[in-house]
Amino acid sequence: MRGGPARWIVGGMLTAIAILWFIIWVFVVVDIIRRPQFSTVKKIAWALIVLIFPVIGVIAYLIVRPPDSSDRYGRAGDHDPDERMRGSHPV
Image 1 (cartoon, rainbow, N blue to C red):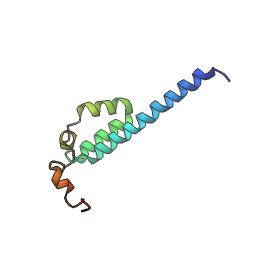
Image 2: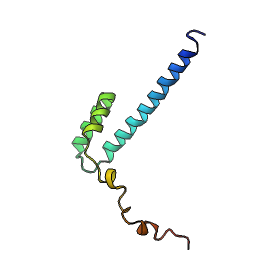
Image 3: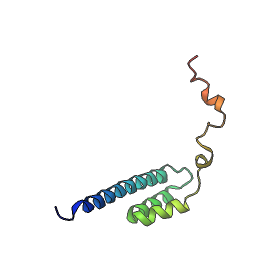
Image 4: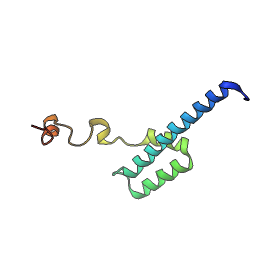
């Protein structure tokens, strides 16, 4: 066994970081595609930036992206708790 247990620990940490980064990258690509206020050209441009420069592109997008109304206020229709409960109450 070359390197001992420290090598396994470092390898496991790097694998965990790579998996987390891939998940963040996928969420960013999905956010780009689902953004209604972006034109098709803007979506393609951001997607290419994120695909060509994964680390820099994701960081730049997360800093520059405009806030969505659901980012601040939750999903549409969640304003009145009584309305959300209506129709789903069993009694």
